[in-house]
Amino acid sequence: MKGLKKKRRVQVIVLAFVALAVSTGLIGYALRDGINYFRAPSQVVEEPPQASEVFRLGGLVEEGTLVRGQGETVRFSVTDGGASIPVTFTGVLPDLFEENQGMIGTGRYINGVFEASEILAKHDETYMPKEVVDALKEQGVYQEPES
Image (cartoon, rainbow, N blue to C red; front, side):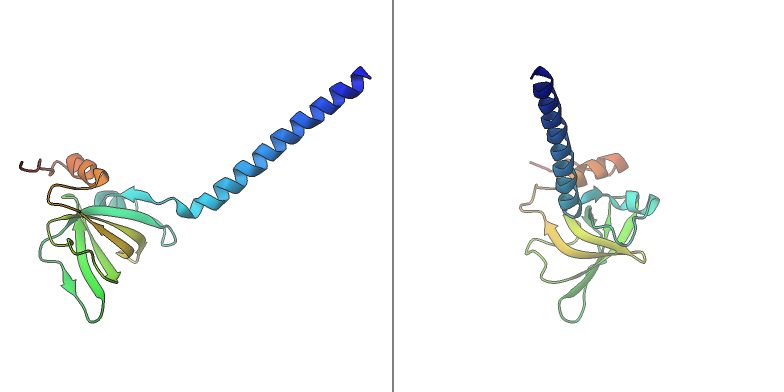
C-alpha cells in the first residue's frame, strides 16, 4: 500500500513538471512576436538586424531630412549623434512629429532603410523617451531641457 502511494506521488510530480514545461514553452512561443527590442541608430549601424526582425528605432529626427512624398509616404532620417538611419513611413504622422524632436518607430531594417509601421512622437516640449535619452547620453550629445 505504501509503495503505491509513493509511486502515485512521483507520477503526479513528474506530470506537474511536464505540464509546467509545456505551458512555459507555449507562453514563450506566443510572446516571441510581441517583443520589440529598442535600438539606437549607432547600434543598428554596428550590428544590422536581419530583415525579418521587428524592433524599435529611436533618436532625433535629423534636421533637413523630412520629405513628404505623394500620398501618405514620408521619408526622414533618425540620428543619435553618432549615426543616421533613413526611415520610410506610410501613414499619418503624430501631430507633434517634427525635425530635431525625439521619436520612436517600430518596424524592420531592410536594405539599409528602416521601414516603420508605427511612429511615436514626444507628447510635450520636454518629453523624450527614456531609451532615446540613454542613447543620446551614450553618444555625448544629450542636453538637459530648459525649465
